[in-house]
Image 1 (tube, rainbow, N blue to C red):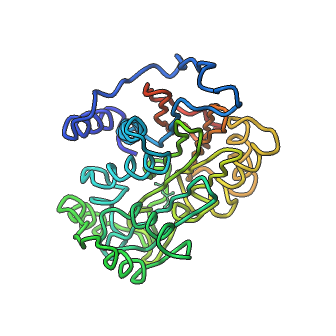
Image 2: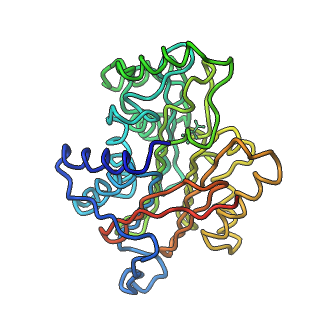
Length: 332
Ligand code: ASP
């Protein structure tokens, strides 16, 4: 995880470069009021609600709000919002500038889900700056859900995506430094998870989500994490709610975490209770000293929740265009 102040500087710089409104940093202990008007008498929230992992989520939410203001759907908001983070070369865990695998190649994972229960994803994708947009194309242009590796790359090129070298000089230097002292194992610790996962409810009350990452730094070649796996890194059910995950993908995959959170909401838990129960499920089943997982969830009524195994997970929440950064509660 990058340091807090570095994150703020980077998000603010990105916002300036992209011409976004200055991002509002509010205190986490000052929750935004939910106005009754947003429910429109249906029990479904309709003021625009977005949750995105980590500090880069502020920029994603600002873009998502712009999309909604221009008539865009929740799906437009999450795809365009997360795509901005994919293009940020200073981010080391998503898209351009993402840390490579141990062979020096950047491989990307992403998925999206829309309100119709529709889903698309790509994994082990190389040379394409916007895996989240390719995931959307898989969902909208093919009868499939997940394309991998060269097949995903071929599909992206056929869709008109331009190939690009995603290994920046900084990432290459960091990888070369890592090689000098590397033990033969991927770096897996609580400081190394910065995937962007974003879930949103638009002004019509519909839900969508997106998740995109370069995965663990210096992972084994071919390793795919939770982020492109529907139900693991992301799950959306337009009748119930949405969830996304960040952290050690293997732990999330073994418990199908995002699906679990949404199913717990279906059973009557609040988003907060559901995130806590999903974290506890991991903690009961595996040692968690050296791994971090954080969940972020919303329901259709405008309620949100988040929870992590350890301290350090934070996220951006936007309601009706107002954004705040919140430190997630944690178990240990
Ligand atoms: N979940 C991602 C993965 O395991 C990592 C992250 O959240 O940064 O690939």
